[in-house]
Image (cartoon, rainbow, N blue to C red):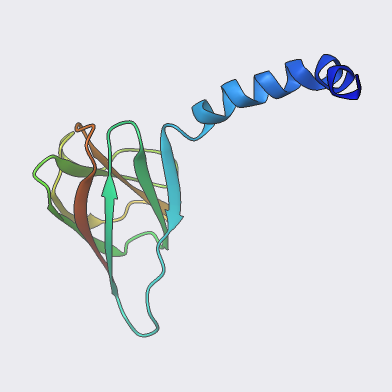
Length: 128
């Protein structure tokens, strides 16, 4: 009887939470890039699947020069965004990029694939 009262009272809330939770995290995850003390390059090894992009954030100053390279699966690529969200990469499927940052703040690197099977990659980020 107590269990029935519980589900009558909280069942709809529980059902809503179970249906919405997968949608909240389905698109991407965000990770902060940390450089080892005295280093200007970070190397990240990970994997990505379609619809689960990985967004890397790194604090940078306007005018700094950044290089980004991804290797591994041919189907993995990235895009670089300024802190205001402007795409500064030259194409939609970038594997190598370098340039001077037009804005300071959290520069974003979005790593993605068009494959539903997990794709391993190595991301190299340099900043000076």
